[in-house]
Each structure stands twice: as C-alpha cells, then as structure tokens.
Length: 194
Image 1 (cartoon, one colour):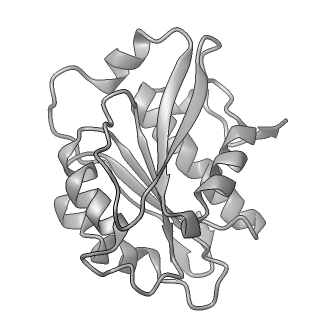
Image 2: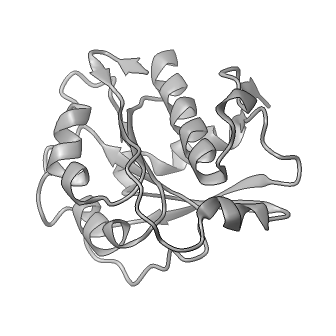
C-alpha cells in the first residue's frame, strides 16, 4: 500500500509465548476484541468509525470484530491488554513531537506494547499532510524496529484519500490474518461497506 511515496513496513518476526493467539481465537464464539489506541489528535475516533464499516470476506460467521478505544495522553492510568487479541496504534504523522521520549505514544509502546505478545498494527495516520513524518522515520523514532518482539505492521494511512483508506483496510486484513492464522486465500482484497 502506498500513500505518496511511503510504503508500509512489516516484520513477521515471532517468538514463542506459549499458547498461540490462533489457538485462543479458535475458542471464541462471538466477539474478537481489538484495541485501538492513540491520542485524540491522532484521529482514533474517526478510524474506529471507518473500521466498523469494513466487512471482511472470510471472517468466520461466529466472530464479530469489536473495537475498543484507549485514548492516551501524557498522563494515564494502568491499562490491561489481557482481554484483546491485537493492538492498533494510531499515530498522528503530523505531530513533530512524536519522537520525544515523553510523547504518549512512546510511553505507551514502552510500558505496554513492547511487553506483550500481541500482534501490533500501527497506522501512521494523516499522511495526506505535506509535512507528515514518513513511515520509516516513525518506525525508527518509536523504536519499533529494534524493540518489538513479535509480528508487527506499520501502514501510512489517511481518511482524506481513497489510497489512505485502502491502507487502513489492508492493515486490518493483515492483523486479522495474523491473529486468526487465516489462510491468506480466504480473504480477498475486496471490501464491502455497510
């Protein structure tokens, strides 16, 4: 997926953490809880509205994606990720303070994401802005490449362009394939909106 000159970056590096998420998902009967994390400025509310419109071909009929949001700020209380099957971190690509070690995104990654076995999808959002930080810069500044210890995917996204929306869908499909250990042929690239 390309937005401007930015490409997605993915790493399929896995380490063993006991029971696999795929095994956990096979026991689900109703909801597939995914957590969407970000600052208010990153656009998490708009992303969740868009995610809820996506119909995923091949998703088992007994499962319904359930997106829950955690709005992070400079100060936030303890967060438990134990009940989720995947993390979607929405990053505001126009935020020039993002690389700061004190930014909410960096703090959340350090305190939670780097310590969990959950697969992580990162939306480098607002890529339509001329001054948006590139995906590689975000991945490097957030220390994702060196610290994350399992499968991850970072997508350049935008709700202002059709390509940016397609990247949101591609990222979600990647997360679902990884979490549920889907056969990739079961999910087509077509998306149906409600």
